[in-house]
Length: 122
Image (tube, rainbow, N blue to C red; front, side, top):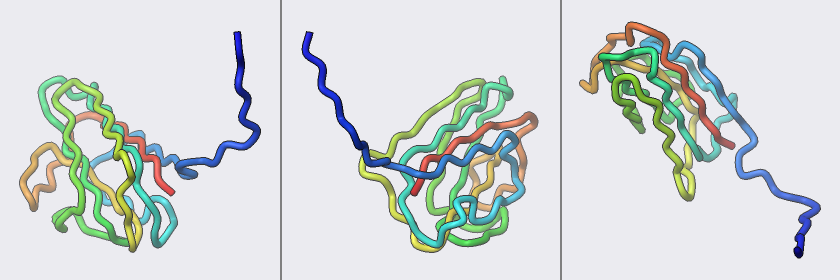
C-alpha cells in the first residue's frame, strides 16, 4: 500500500475559542485579534431540551446584548450543530459573542441551561 507523507502542513485556523456557558452576557473580542477569518462555529444546545439557542457574533471589539449581530447561528432544542464556513468569513474589528433563546433582534433572554460553543478562527 502506498503512503504519502507531508512534512509541513499549514494551519487553516490558529485559534480555538471554547465557551462552556454561552449566554446573554457579551464576551468581547474573544480571539484577541483586530482582524482575521472565522472558519467554524459549533453550538451545543443539548442541555436545553425544549428551547432553541441563537448564537450571535458581531464583527466588533465589543458589543452589548441588543446590538445588531453580523452572524447568527441556530441550534434547535436539544441539538448540537456545527457550521463550517467553506472559505471563511473575514472580520475586521474583532469577534464579540453572546447567545439568546429567541431570534428577535433585541432579545436578551439567556438560555435556561448552559450552551457550549466552539469557534475556529485566525
